[in-house]
Length: 288
Image (tube, rainbow, N blue to C red):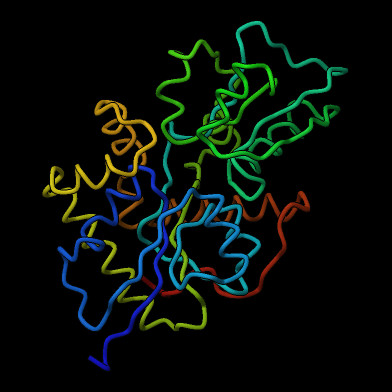
């Protein structure tokens, strides 16, 4: 039909995203006038693709969106914000952070919120340390620390549930540190839409994602095989804990507290010279 608008939609293969978007991918929720070409990828790949404005609607790290606000604008649904869910800095148990020690730190991409949070943390807690940051896929970070290629690893996603079983220790919880500093939830990832698509279309997509989350919450087993097909960690308990932690009330609508967390995050990054300022409206849909 000529009145169908086809949008390119990209989200990560992590269980929280496949849980959120399964009903859209499987066409289990009505999307009048909309169709989607779907791509899955790790979040840093999606961050880099957004820098080329590849996708109409895409999952992004908040750190990446901060430098892409001229091209993309923020939806209020589908985001990963929360408490007790931030990135962890892990190492072998005997590792120490010393002022004169040259550290090699594995991060899940330079454009990720995890990397930016780690840089915030270092500036506050260890201002004299200038480590070598090495970007790599998130699933290779812990093996890199275990085999000695990296001194520290900044882990995200399922890593927080399994690092102890791999013989690693948590040096710091960056999410807890952020909460202590700000009193706000940590903004990790978001769903953004090309600014040029306009508010009316953005509103339709925003509402569709909310209905997709509602469908997943009401029929949690419906997407089980889809989620497992894309998960890095296949253990059912880990997948369940991952979804329970990262899909919460902020995912359906980030609300005033979520908005305050995002604006604070961007403000701190701009003040630190780690993010470009932007005068464009932050949200695609105003007054919602």
